[in-house]
Every structure is written in structure tokens, then in C-alpha cells.
Length: 207
Image 1 (spheres, helix red, strand yellow):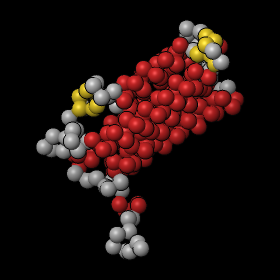
Image 2: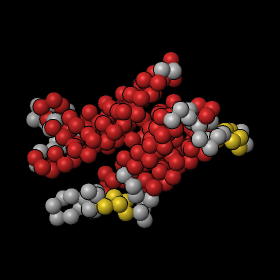
Image 3: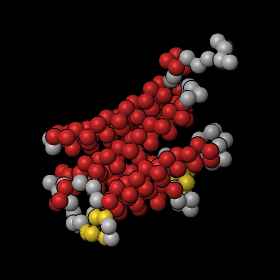
Image 4: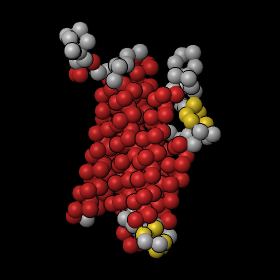
């Protein structure tokens, strides 16, 4: 039975860093909706908006933890808010952007879903291992595997294609029929990034 003493006030219980995490997640959701807008009417402005929101999410993700440490104020929801926002912004949004740009073959979709799955697993692993990876000040010394923001590599690849007019049937490296599905080699960037996320041997220093 929830009592007044243990009831969590959502608005008053959030810190500035939590609001930045929320902004990160909303930016990622906005990028997904913008990608859908591009699919709906083909106006490049929608795709440009989706691509522009991604670096804004990176900024929010960069500053939320640093502000929490600098102010010494973090709510109990902070770690979960950060992880959930990151799944949307750095897992789902990159997949939606890739699909909108033209990665719509069966193998392409599987590659992008693989990235999303790796992002979810990567964040879950971080949540349960961060304490053991922290130094005396409580700061995590390094990431096991590349952080989920490493999806920037995949988004950067499809953004370069889109900004040079290579979308849809004109994607770089073409399309190839492999068994029952079509593969655009560009989609393999998503696979490579996903593998990097779940790697245990790859240690990336945390700035």
C-alpha cells in the first residue's frame, strides 16, 4: 500500500539533469516522428529535422550526467530516465532514420533491429555493472563496449548519403538480393556498431 511518506512526487522530485534526460528522449521521439513525416510526404525538410535532432540529443546526453555530478543533485529516477531516453534517441531513432533514407530491405531491417537490441542490452549491462566500474568519486572510469551514442557512426553514414542525394534506390554500394531478402551494404554499419556496443573486451574511456 503506497503511503504519503514513500510516494514519489514526479515534478518536484526531478533535478535539472533529469529534465535534460527527458529532453534527450523527446528529441529522439521527435526524430522518429520526423522520419515518419518524410516517409509520408517525401519532403526533405522532415528528414533534415530528424538528422538535426540527433546531435541535439547527443548534447543533452553529454550534459545530463555532468550537471548531476557538478551540482551534486540527482534524483532516484536519474539512471532509469537516462537509459530509457538513450534507447529512444540512440537505438530507435537511428533505425527510423535509416529506414526513411532507404534501408528497407529485409536484411536492412534485421540489421537495424540488431542495433536496437544491442542498445537495449548495452544499457541494461551498464546499469548493473556501473557500480563495479566506478572509482572512489563514483564516476565510471570506462565503458565496456562503445556507448550507445556510438550510433552516431550509423546516423552519420546515412546522413552523408542523404545530404548528397543518395537515398532510396540510389544508396551508396547499391542493393543486393541475398536469399529471400534485399541487403544494402550500408546497413552493415548498424551491425558493426551494435557489435561494438555489446563487446566486453572493448574498453572505451569515459570522458
